[in-house]
Image 1 (tube, helix red, strand yellow):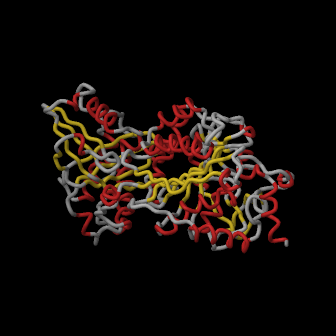
Image 2 (image 1 turned 180 degrees about the vertical axis):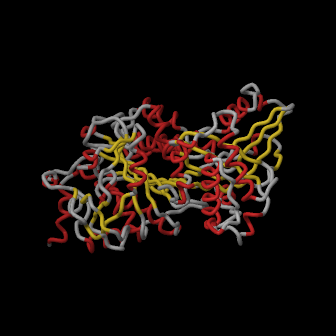
Image 3 (image 1 turned 90 degrees about the horizontal axis):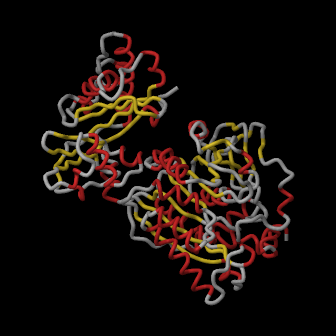
Length: 537
């Protein structure tokens, strides 16, 4: 009977379908949740190296089975029953997934994770953002451990990203936010069952203001743009009844709960963060993952396709709507056409690394007053790479501590690519009129990004510009301006905001892009950086 103990615990506590600890779960509070001894992590799944600090899941054995075989049996059942239906194609960017006890939220969550498994995406990092139910704090909490252990094994944490984010408010390392929190934990076994080797970036959201949300979105957006990253937003929806202090209706509860969920869903499908916030303000809807969902909406490109996969309530499961929690599984896809264009490559990964090394050596030699390097030198590994000696438009971007320090390039294919990298590295360092020339003392703080461009093509109007896919050039009576494809997504701009800023850059009135004589050109780019390639020490 021992293997059924966890089921009994689920049944006796109706709180398990909500966002609170179950009765009797205090037994975990006195135990250390972090193993500070070296732990050899199994290859299935996650890391294979020894980890120093491992967080032990605190809800195994209560909210879900505490033994591996029992948990695998339950997840197999959920996955077999789930039938995610969608015609959406392209890359799966994110999921909204519930986080109550598995008998309640598990069947709904399985719809999203089964879809992930069916897609077969090469996901190497999962960013999990969940709300805080136990600790009251402002900002976004990061862990100080490097492994997360569940009955299915241990998953590594992307500590390099944690180290970068903790430097930027509203992010901060706050281990106590994870001590009893289930919103992140409940997603991990599902991910372990759906994926093979991967890391996680666990984040617990406290209270956030609009500035926090926008800044967090800007800092996380580069991860969203990586094809090997998936975002999981952990949230239950409406918490209804006296236990939650929210009962805006007393009749037709199943229908009204679905109506309330659909109202929230409609704002999410429009990617309208302001409308989502207004929904909460006007209805009082008790969506516990309100802040994590808001961060996601602030990040997503405007052409994201939103697909609801499954909806359920604990009221239906227990046949008692006095207190009920709603669960939604929602998937977010990148437009197929755009994804195909963004993945177009001129050169392979080895050549990307070679060009970045060439740019770095060019910067060093330029700052030292030495002759510039020969792209065909064996040290760069480019001598036999035909593609890097074909002519391409190319921009070189220099950043210093995540701030733009210089960006200059050639839009049209004027020089062989490798030569263009050398020329534009020097130009970005010395001749960008927006900045003083880079000095030798700054070189170690500079990071380099290269954008290789397709040939620009004129389009009929601004309506043909796709944010997240296209770079854009505007031209009007002697004025011109250009933004690379990554600029608008990094800034969180829509098409109108992008063109407003681009007009200012071109020396035109902000709304000049609406003029009938404005000409628009678009191009795409293969973008790669030292940070992405792991070339920074």
